[in-house]
Amino acid sequence: MTEATTPPRRAAVVFIFITVLLDILAIGLIIPVLPRLIEAMTGGQTARAAEWMAVFGTGFAAMQFVVAPSLGALSDRFGRRPIILLSNAVLAANYVAMALAPSVLWLLAARLVAGGASASIATAGAYIADVTPPEGRAKAFGLLGAAFGVGFVLGPAFGGWLGNDDPRLPFWVAAGLSAANFAYGLFVLPESLAPANRTALRLAAATPWRALASLRGTPGVAGLAGVFFLANLAQEVLPAVAVLYTGYRYGWDAATMGLALALVGVCSAVVQGRLVGPLVARIGERRALLVGLGFGAIGMTAYGLAPSGAWFWAAIPVMSLWGFATPAVQSLLSARVGAEAQGRLQGALSSLRSIGGMIGPTVFALSFAASIEPGTDLPGLAFWMAGAVLAMAGALAWRVGR
Image (cartoon, helix red, strand yellow):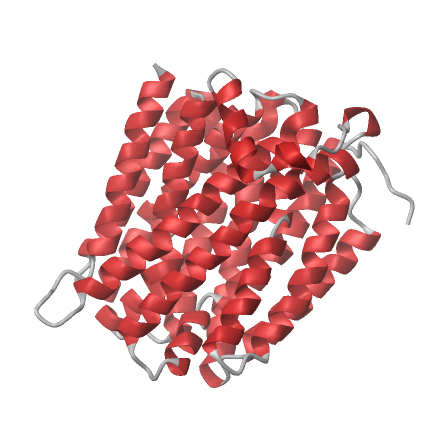
């Protein structure tokens, strides 16, 4: 296929929306079953499974931290499309390996490879910056967030349903979706980065430490990057403990958790796909960021306090308003670097996200494990800690705005 360049903006956003949607569908399928599969492999002990989830989350994030900046630099040199294709090809093979895993260590090794290969979502951020003007990026990033929402509507619901009878079946379906995404990228997805905007490849400058140091060199970026980091750190509580927490506290099975995650996806899709643009147009990106972080802190606290499954369900729409924050901070950050550096910016942000991913699963999963030990009755502790982190992010965002 002949590589296209500089596609029409609206069509390009639709193309990348579909790419991210297929990615999230594959990820969403395994969310309700991965903790259960680990639990089964560790003798059915919930606290032990939580400890292993910490290892899985930290290892996945560590691989992203090491690899993501180099992939960002490669996308600045060779374009976004080849990186997306490579990512999806590796992920398709990886899900097959996870479906066949006979032990926790095999499953962990496959998960580490997935961490190194999961570049297509971060590259999608650079793709959006390539094809949208600064004033339209918050809305475009909101549509990207809506792809996450739609993916989480269908993925966890089907994953929970499929996983009730066979916890390995969702991995096979995820492999098929990643293979379909590879085919879509190969035959349909156009390149977004024009040759004139490509830069020389300097992998020595694309190490995680150099990438993070580059955030300090552009005015206004470091503070916003701190907000981005704290928000992503707080988000790690959900994959780390949500499945185990709801199973322990409310007796939810994989199907029920899948439906709850589907509601999260519906609400997130509405917020990011329909409400971000009008809100940003009305109050601006900085205020939208503060509103989102505030609702996130309230929602996390409500999750931890919910005395029953019904209260947890009621907190989901409140929590979804957190979705105003991510497109706003991404738009503010992307507006501060040139077209030739969007891939490196996304690589640096991916490294920050990965640091949060290394810290968060360990802190939140081990806090949850400790909170349900005999003599302790604080199962919502991990969510309260995440709410406090989001409150800190809001305070920093307020300071940066001033």
